[in-house]
Length: 262
Length: 188
Image 1: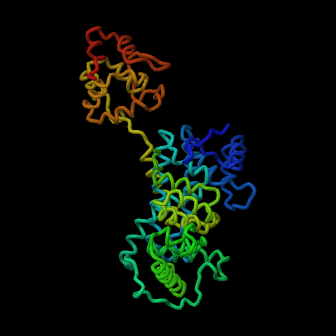
Image 2 (image 1 turned 180 degrees about the horizontal axis):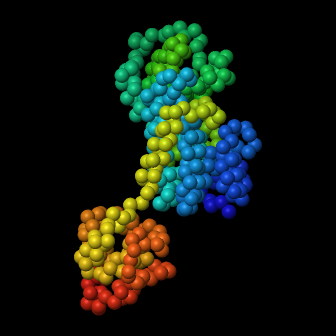
Image 3 (image 1 turned 120 degrees about the vertical axis):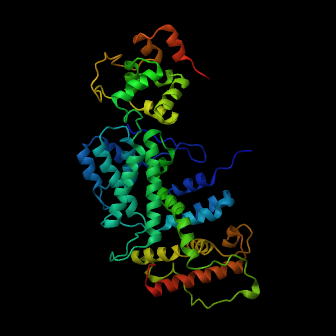
């Protein structure tokens, strides 16, 4: 019997694992440790025997009271390997250069997870329940926390963000040539999207938020007061939003033109 | 008035939503407008293209995982405040605490129920060995030590199976009534 989670939702209901996660956990429960490790070594997500990371987190947690340190270490390394692989890679494809900000983000996420796992060994850590509900989401949340200070510091040396509201007279409407990184024909290409993620990472927060809202299909402005617009959500004028958007797209275009991830 | 959930609770909740499309983001932003910027930041993180698990780890990544394991071990290896005490320290400590040596052995082997110690006694013990009260407390919270002693003992074991109360262990070791009262006295 797989023990239920304890963390409660904002509405006060106890979180539940995905049905498929529970099913795989039950399957694993009757296997030998060796067979469990064999299943966990499958890295192809579309393989029917692939074990989702939610299950791996559960296995690591349920081994906490177990006396087999060797088995625990193997599970731990498998989990951390997945964590590291799920983060933007700090090494360039040719392995010759390392992005310091990305390496720092990776280390911060790993250390955060380490903290949760070690405190879970002595007393149940509800924060880890999120990783059993939706591993990729919980990891994205940890990555967001880890990223903010790193990019802030990185930007300080690269660019300055214009924080003040931009008045009508100051605005320079650029001819964007219809550039939209999300409508590009390459958008279906995984490498393009990975590079686009990398370009967006370098943007100042406000620009990044505008780009994300545009990606999600929010309108910049609307006559209809019931529509949640970018302008409304971020509390900035329509002109400011447009100017920030143009700057962001300029940066993204330049990033692609440079052909570098730095 | 109900308490507003914290930023971290709202973000954690959003992060595990089965669907983090625009509708969900909008619902969260309308419900928690004060957290809108952070929700958008998280939405962007969630939209990131997933890397494949099939790629090989670089040497640097492998080293980062090994370093993480080392610090995990550091954080989870419990401190045993008795580990560094030699036989001579042990005798001196028993004397300082005015308890028979076999009682101290029983304490060290965690054969005494933690909740039955007077706090004053634990504080004195911590003070004598130059450790914090918390370290002593967490040592005694560890699972019962294995039956094998770390050094040879010529004493008769006080108890062998389940844990006993502090008072019981003192009585079994023949501590006289006045000494007993002194040892069981708590300052709170």
